[in-house]
Length: 288
Image (cartoon, rainbow, N blue to C red; front, side, top):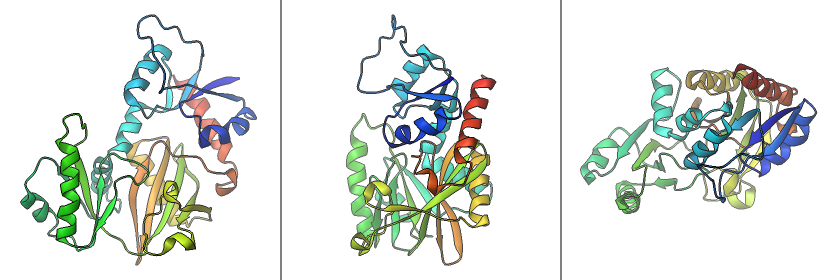
């Protein structure tokens, strides 16, 4: 059987083991964090043929990958591309793919830079770290005072010399938007989910991250949503990609992408989802 290295042992790992085994792929955990890594004498005890997604801990992942020399379905470059929210927005906008109106701020800047940057945006606006995930640090500012208050906190974080990414985004807020996570594998949309807050959490809240209590519900995606997600994956050149879409007032925009998306229950995707996934994994191994 083909040996697949997966750097996470959480939900995705648990869900893919059995379906991939039925398709000739044995899944193993390649631990990339909370361990020691012998950089000079280490001989890997686990041998793999191909990696699934490059480890999110890029420093550790680079060291481990040098020892393992694996081809990856999603490479280090793919992970870096998707993690840079501002870079993704700029690339998609240049390709005429609809995205929210957005500006990137690179600290340190004077307060006037922030106020001038949002002249063409209407309040409320969304402020988000450029490279965080799971909705961490995302806030909504109702007015200029609120925005500058949020920026004050970001400035405190960015003042710390060890902070690597000192940029953040300010984007238009899309009220009452439906939130979709669309999965694209090997350039083909294989289904997706709509993320909603349960009724007991919905009052006064607007973020739909599953890690913040939202529920992911499978649905039949409209053809336009599927084509848009496929365009995004093709533009970024990422084989296995989660594409986050927001829909409101007749607009459908790409909000973010995720090159390390969690795989949900197979029932929430198209028939043949694991066939397609296995095909891409095997092709990656063969092309190396």
